[in-house]
Length: 117
Image (cartoon, rainbow, N blue to C red; front, side, top):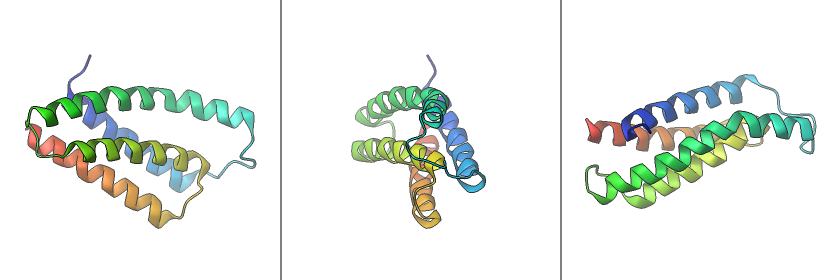
């Protein structure tokens, strides 16, 4: 079991890797491609697991007022990351929207890390 700082840093690494994927990968030929779906499922499983654990710990530090982040920001960050995960593989949004989500997530993660130090 890792601490919230370590998880947040890992979260940021995943975020950067997903952005790289979004910018360099081609979208799947078919949205109904089962093999592609299985690949996405396998590759994103550790990220989803980290997200669940991260949200729980982040909400705990918010509740204890260790950080100056609102609980809704934590929940929204998790939801935005879930969206970004799918957009990174299916490449189904404009780059501007993708980057807005990316920056929003980075902002909250950076705020959390700064407050934890």
